[in-house]
Image (cartoon, one colour):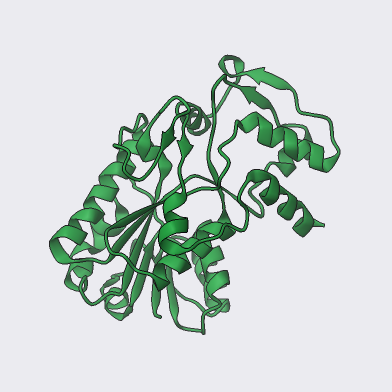
Length: 285
């Protein structure tokens, strides 16, 4: 496998850890020269993007993973490299695009699956639908072996509730009926690898665990694991949230994950937040 990762962020780093590739077999893009230097020290081949012509890297790759999100409503990889990707579409073995369950919009806590119509209610969600559509156009028009992965809220090492609970800044924000789906970063990595081993061009997969839950329950469980008092409750309409946080609370849904199990044979390492948080705490200690 010769893997090109467009956007070397949190999820991509864990994928590389799971793959344990031979030096020189993974090329990555980043905006940061510091991150590029660190990637090179780890045996990866970095590219600064945008700013580097990716045509040679696309021609080299057998697999491409796109983790970069839309910018100004446009997919940055397609904006700079669509023609090169289209030219090599039928030669590639696998292409993955990381999207979000935000494309489904608000369902009042109801269930959604991969066949649910896309009715995003936020600008971020609408931008993701546009990006998915643009990538799917390459699948339909040029035979790109595309796979779309719609990710729920990501957590994992360094991205959990423990720090805020410890420092006293955590709050249990109460919005009746609000539920979120989540996915541990290690489970993202194992799903991507399973898809690479069982390619199904045009497939769409929801990536989430088995237990959609109210956010205040997760905070409370984290406090219990730490042996600390429960953070205070706060009504949603009194919480001063950032625009990003408020956008998450604008939508409530339960995301169905049966396809990754049935089609890819995935068995989640962390099927609910309780298992995931317990593992994070054990790793810390």
